[in-house]
Image 1 (cartoon, rainbow, N blue to C red):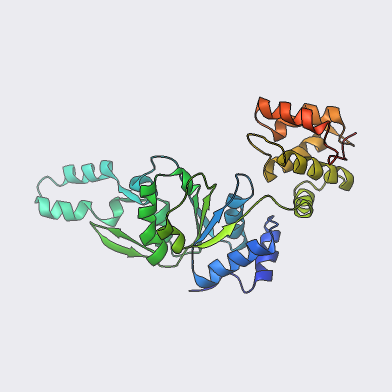
Image 2: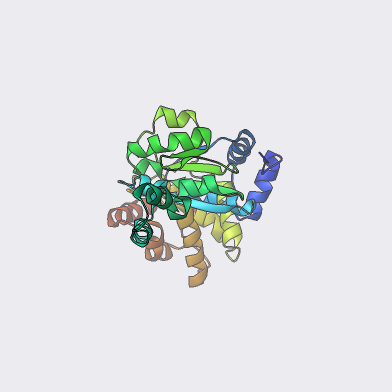
Amino acid sequence: MSKLFASVDEVTQRLAASGYLGSVDIATAVFLADRLGKPLLIEGPAGVGKTELAKAVAAATDAELLRLQCYEGIDEARALYEWNHAKQLLAITASDSVGWDSTRDHVFAEEFLLARPLLAAISSPTPTVLLIDELDKADVELEGLLLEVLSDFQVSIPELGTVRARRRPFVILTSNADRELSEALKRRCLYLHIDYPSAELERQIVALKVPELDAALRDSVVTTVGALRQLPLRKVPSIAETVDWASTLVALGARTLGREVVRSTLGVLLKYQSDHRVAIEKLALDPRVDGLE
């Protein structure tokens, strides 16, 4: 199996070139997942860059990104494969004069198979990043389907046999930890927890994504968002929302982070009215928010 990265430093450099700034822990986990050929399970709060990491790995390695978005009720037909019943019916109708045994063998051939993300990743002969996103939102039964894929990189299809990986995909699973994942699944994966970035790293991210924002205002943005994350909010601002807020301030032509600017743009950061009330009350009193006028 060919390796995608030669060192941890190379991971850091290539992810940065793809627009993703991560910690040494993140780069190390990506390197080890590649070197050991193991899936990488990433847990952490929503909006800390778990999904973006998968996209960045795909971009950094010129690989195709195949994404399985998990949700309650997702089943084998959406995750692995299903048969093209309409095409099978047409084939059966066209072969009325042929015996059923022959027809059955024909309609359960690969040409009638609709590959979903798991099977598509296993079947791909080219570099592929398989993203199994928000696995904790799916039912426990889906984890059982994943065990064969994640341990042996193969899929068993009763009508066709076992499809083995032509080239192992780089697999990333993400979870917001809304429910505990099974021990059997965790044993097959390397584990990485991503939390909100340090203030210094978030400043670097904002500088990369919104270079038009001057350094003083960037510091105020990161300080304010950091203070908001300490409040008892229903949903704290994500990294993406920090970047959106920085872009908002550029669009408004704001030169300083005054209280009126903060109040009028809170909707970029906070998505619940109760959170707005908490922020407006606390930001006025919190001495840590020294960027406010």
